[in-house]
Amino acid sequence: MQMQNSYIRMLNYEKTTSLSLVQGDKSKIRLQLLDKSQKLIDSLNTKTAEISIIETSNNTLREFITTVVEDGVVTFNLNSVLAIGEHQVRIKVEDYYFPSSSSTFSLVILPAHDINTEIIPTEIETINIVVEKMTADVVEQVSVNAIDYIVNNKADFKGEKGDTVAAPPKVFTRAEYDALPTKSADTLYIVKEVE
Image (cartoon, rainbow, N blue to C red):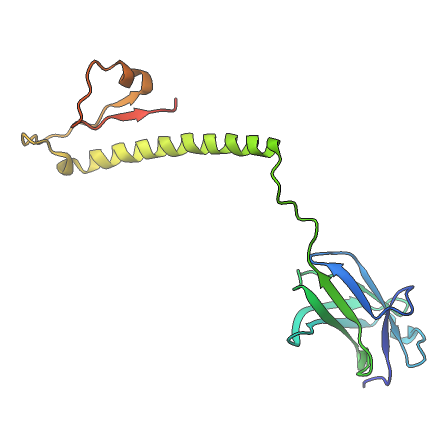
């Protein structure tokens, strides 16, 4: 049964027909359920209220919430981040629908305004430390994988003279590599940078 001229009103705000929220706001919303005389309907107390949040631009249900009516008031918060723009609030309690077709209550979702896109110097230092640590881990893993690949694919690394046995490559530390008396352009040297 749809009540003739049933209304929704924000608690303590008699003239309000909409509420503006920042996108992602989880604040409690308290709405009064009123009859055609704009009087609070106490007879619905302890009944389950089904709240539908409908995006006005395309008439799409965006959120469905259930709660209990207490003192003629429904209290809820938005669980999802709604699209920016206007959304209609519709409430059903048993066979009663709020608001009636002659009135509306809207949530106006505004863009989040407190997003900080600046990086402060201490965050840059932290980022550099993380990158350095990740680089060391990656270099070590690549070195291990390269050695494993060479050992497991000996035939692919056979020398020009027809060597039949490929010895595992020597992995040099930076100091050992720098101390080599000569370096051949035809030789693969593996240098482990991280100790």
